Image (cartoon, rainbow over all chains, first blue to last red; front, side, top):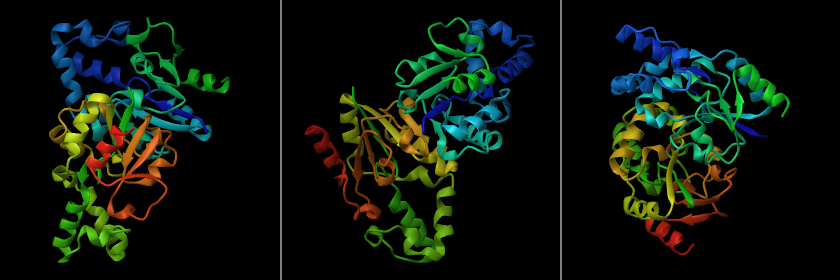
Amino acid sequence: MQRIAIDMDEVIADFNSKHLSVFNREYNETLTARDLMGTRLRELRPHLKNEIIAYLKDPEFFSDLEVMKDSQEVIRELSEQYEVFITTAAMEFPTSFSAKYAWLKEHFPFLDELNFVFCGDKSIIHADYLIDDNHRHFQRFQGQGILFTAPHNINETGYVRVNNWLEVREYFKSN
Amino acid sequence: MQRIAIDMDEVIADFNSKHLSVFNREYNETLTARDLMGTRLRELRPHLKNEIIAYLKDPEFFSDLEVMKDSQEVIRELSEQYEVFITTAAMEFPTSFSAKYAWLKEHFPFLDELNFVFCGDKSIIHADYLIDDNHRHFQRFQGQGILFTAPHNINETGYVRVNNWLEVREYFKSN
């Protein structure tokens, strides 16, 4: 059985909406995902970089992210024909462990928690496919990388790209 | 550069001494590692299985385990010639995440936290070697499994076995 590894933030968990929301509230701004096209919040407001990263160190930040549209349904389907693992670079924010685990158990109860992986360097992942919004994880990955569109990666070329979960479904149907 | 994945409990962290100590204290027993040869505490005292497992759900249980003899020195040496990853089946005890992370940062400060992996099913691990006390993790592992002797596994045969960290050093010297 082939194996699909799937990232969390910006792939199944709507990281940007929450991040923009807490930032806009604190700094009285009205930034949207459109403002992040080809960039990241910390590059758009470099003088607030430390504050922007500090939000992610709040143990609760990751607890109430919205689920990305159609991800539950498509992953449930995929899990009937593939081994599905959730592989998230949680080591960058170790305060996030508990919230990420609880979030996965809440929103993807049909996945086995033994298939959750909290890591840093994703070259440790042994899988046939990796769906991720960060192309850097594909450099040393030996399977097929699939770039999930996120504002920061819209200008990246040279990767298999999917724009949403319906396109993920199509990719694996025609594969 | 070749990669070595290393388990935590009973390999670099002395899980048994702590587990026996809290059990002996609560039940006024004097069990030692010798009593666990070829078995496990929960099999030796099956009527207390739930209590024995419950200790591991205490978020602090894993915070003060002793470091296995010679593991720091040998892993420091290995990390000069190999990529070293710490791969622990933490998903079985999600309350252990923070303590395990802090323990690794305290006792193995020379390792990069991006090389820590909290997982469940270790077939997700992409490495050339896996040093582990649980042979079940070798079944679907594509690299070389190296069984680290622990009381529960002394009767297992058919695996490359090391009895301590000095033998790990020898294995990689002659390999």
